Image (cartoon, rainbow, N blue to C red; front, side, top):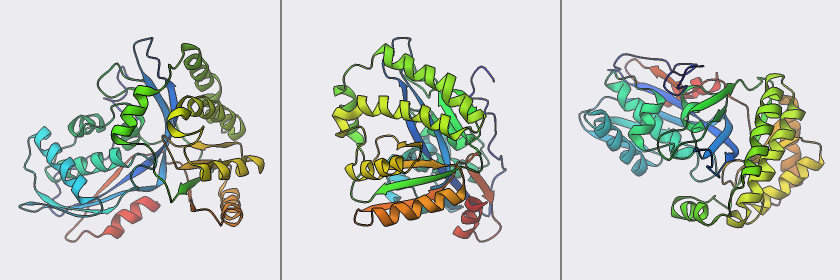
Length: 348
């Protein structure tokens, strides 16, 4: 691996020339499975692990235009990201950007980062610029704590970052493919959102010290159990390691989020899945979204149906996804670009 994995990614995003007829872009959501070291005693803080998902994701359709126009989902926030990126790269803030779909905000799947990077990448592509994901992050102010959303946009797969030194995006220190067969259940609490904004910043301030001993346990489990299990496609061993990370991080964040997991409803579903024999499960980021990883699509379908039946009285929605071992995808379009172009990209 190169000295700075973020500046020389293992898998480059497709590069393009200027797109006079427009373009379509799909950017995947990600699961954030926990932090490794909030202590910072070795000079770096946070250290994240998680992986990208085939869906949900962010879909952008961009067309050349004399003025800047934003339509579709979350247009106000999208406009801010585009203006900031245009200033950073020294290009005119112009073009018609349609946000066809976004990951719901503040549910733990990295919606803000993917929206920001997708829009900045689309704007640059209209002018024939090909910045890296790291440059896009600098342009939009993303990746202040975790680096896996930035790396996921460019590379996909399972990612571990090495924490940051107070500024800049954390470098990726390990990347591996998620086994294609594994199925991922996403568990949405439709009546709640996770901590964000000032409340999130205040929560980090008020949390108790993250001990060096806890950080050591998490780093050891990641290096000596989680990553080898992933390399061998051993879901039970992978799940056991994820459980350690989830329990340690969940207990640390419990004073801010009300328990090991943020949502009592998602907690009930996760407990039920664990009792039913599911070995890999937890909460993504601040939640409230939960996840469970199953060995194959058939088992995923079976357990999704079971959750829907057993917890029909709760405002919990189940979506079946899987890991994605590539990052965002950009396609040029001739004449008329339609959202179905990016839907097709997402389903490949």
